[in-house]
Length: 183
Image (cartoon, rainbow, N blue to C red; front, side, top):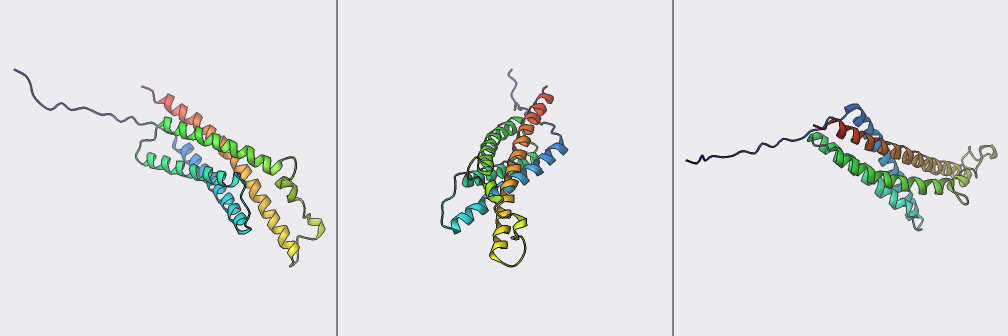
């Protein structure tokens, strides 16, 4: 006599133990880096548009790269909330963003500190000893705007460095989480 019945398949979800403090710190820093890069270059694109001149390729590239970084962070948060954050997904996404951040870092460094006509060379046009830093005139406004733009470029350069290092760190952390949770 054959035995009949329902055969159940037991499905076991594999969960990985992520270091919470490190993951939270990484998320906050990467959100700050991605948002800063997106915001600064979106502002630059707006200014270029107001002047009715084209934007260099680094502007939309950086907006897209920063936006992808923000999207990746929200995907990670969603997976963490469902307890389904897989090291492979994080490692792949981090690698892709690392390449994008590294390309942005290289081009930003060329634009900021390049050999001729670099942004940094324009940062020193209005020197404080020349009297442009005070008073109510167009020269003071030009000085303040120039310093603001220069500081934006330097902030983006710094956040590209920080983002690249943190993405590299996340690839290493993903590998460690994957290795530590082997059966």
